[in-house]
Image (tube, rainbow, N blue to C red; front, side, top):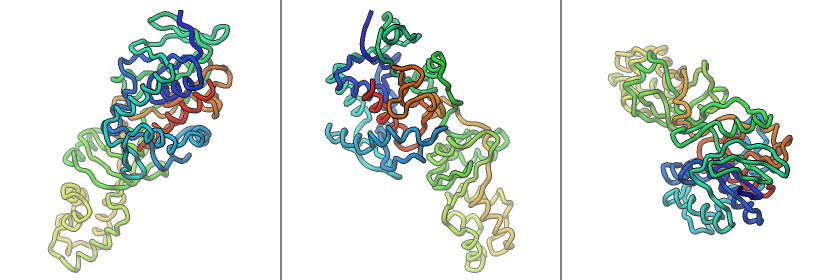
Length: 392
């Protein structure tokens, strides 16, 4: 029977980071994961370049029933701390849009850094070994595994959420929490493309592959980033962002030319170049295919000079305030993260320990803390893993 001081369930970003911190404190640590390789989500993230954090970490960029829960960990282990860690390892990085930081080289550099740090800290790693039932026993916990039971003083659950099941994602961590009487908030796919009913999709089908810089609004939240039309509906960064706020039955609104006075430009063109088609003017702001779609959708067939004021305003509204009603999302299959999770009311914000079960901690995606697209969820993994690593 294996005996250690700390068992960490999950060899993802949060689990490995927690293991390193605990190991550096001299704790005997064992990390268990059913996958054959550690850090798979790190490896595939950011197009293989790992969007490892964001310069704009702030509480309002994380969704949770308790919007301030994440602050304790995020303030004690910041994006600057993780950047310093990469710099010390000689891992080059660069900033893209909106404060997003990526590795210059492959994301596997980050995975290898974490694996080296675990080895240096004396952490054991069992891969290809699915954890089973976790029970409270005298002196700690018993964790069932296919290699036999493991006894530990502390257990850290870093098993992630349900997103990307083909990589082995499951509801294991939520079930474990519930088995100890902890509440789990509603879970749903987040940072995920939106889908439409067949009738709406038939109208949008000709636009598949078209991308535009736009503004998407739902539930009093807006994002200005790229919007991509697909054969299933809508994707792109702005859509992924709004998916965390959108709910079934609600519409979204698209502004295809944010900050532009489209009506004024149409009116000016009506006098200056009356013979051109409306789509020609719209195409100065939109991809041509999208400009044609807007023109046809409004039913405009005359040249710009023949349009009434009402027609001009209708065209402009179709560009600046296009209402669409998704019917769903592409689900966990393509969702980058899971919204919801172990209720933060059940956890100590400083240690991530269950208030009613001493020695049991939950970190990373399994907790009801979900960041925006762009490195926020990795920073929560580093910060929550670090915080628990100081306590176990």
